[in-house]
Amino acid sequence: MRSLARVRLAACLAAAAWIVCAAPPAAAADRPFLSVNTAVAEDDEEQVWAIENWVQRIGRVQSLTVAPEYAFDPFNSLQLEMRRVVRRESVSGHELELEYKHLFNNIERDGWGWGVVATVDLERPQAGPWERRAVSLFALVTLKLGEATSDGLLHINPAVIKPRGERRMLAGAVGAEREVGRRTSLFGEIARDDEGRSVQLGLRHWIKRERLAVDIAWQRVRNNEQRGAGVVLGIAWHDL
Image (cartoon, rainbow, N blue to C red; front, top):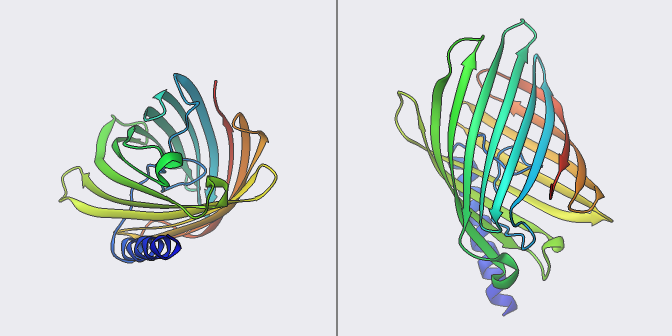
């Protein structure tokens, strides 16, 4: 059984490396990640709300995001991300992302999870009219790296994105997380798109487990619009 688990882990890591090197990701994500979605079904998520808020600052660009989410049951949820982006040159804009997630199994029972996420992205640059920016479809795979989810999780997200007025393109992101202390987790992710790559590494601490959390992360971005490193600060309320 252990040899089979090692083979499965090696195959997943190889797939993750291929996704990161060859495919671009989109912006949809499960916090504290910025690009990665997870396939982890929580049994207690039945008709509950969660609200994630975070601030990013990288070079000349900073943004504030508010993202309410409603879980119909452990396998189906709907999230709306509302983001305001401000650049040092006083150019600002707004972005909206509507995301629906469906999971097909329970990771605690099966040792791995899988699902899909569909998103619609809208933007309104400089107080202009709202425009559809892209639609996306993600495949989600999450693998337990130990007996319990606290021992570590590996997340792999291949996807297809259709930007408005452009051809379809592949997408991808890979992330991992692990508990490193009492109510504290270390997380990291790597993501690529047509314009460049982003990396994030941080810590999330549950002030009240599964209720109130804060996180801080370092991020490096390199693309056509941004280059540099910055910080991400977040706070989350769950099971509202």
